[in-house]
Image: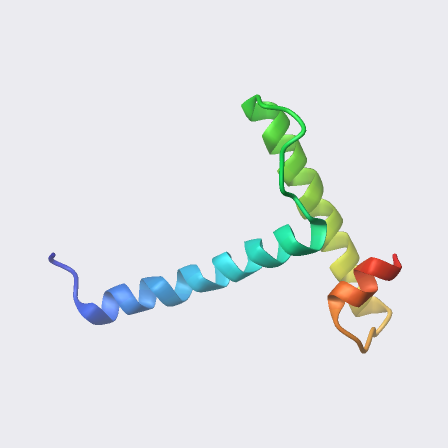
Length: 76
């Protein structure tokens, strides 16, 4: 209760970018369930998905893709 309303708004704005990033990754890479149940297995799946996502984003940028990223991902 010691934080100012403007500080809370700033934190929420910062968090929103992270939330939308993970939502896009989940939707694009369709991570709905995890293959393993150990912490290590889940971390590997998330890191693999992030690496795939980022590499495909780089490919889309370098190819000067004009359409949305989901269409590019589907074609790949």
